[in-house]
Image (spheres, rainbow, N blue to C red):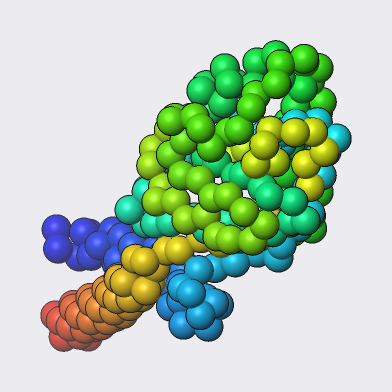
Length: 238
């Protein structure tokens, strides 16, 4: 009975070992990449930053389409977002819930920035007609984070929900133009990379142990087969 189950056990060890090898390599690579990014790709302020790009419209505001936070990336891992804003006029940049932004800009001539891609940079503008003068946006109390002026950073700690970024002139006038760079701070990236590297290494170690166990099992099976063959030879008539 033992001789019948050994081949199945060896097959199981082989399959399990190769699965552990593949997973171990992938997880280890992800961990090394995270550590490398944390130690070499962050700027001096601790953010991973994309190149700044210019956004411009002849309307009174530029608003992003829906930005969902918390669906795919945990907020504790993503950390903070930083917008480096500059322009020739006094600007206002604010972040608020998407539904609130839609209500605020209803009736205001504004532009939605859709299909935004930072690398390579590409944005599609969709204009909306309106006649309402929004006034000075900084007077509104619903903003989760804001910055005003011709040059300055906006930092916002990510929170779950549906959000929109709005760029306006500080007085709410038409003809908005701003250069904006986006950065993300990931405080847990280094520890996540270390954890993934350790887990990947453990998977590879487990794979090595499984290969070794399979080799020992195969060796014992061959030894038993050889012993059985010798016994049969001795007991057979001449």
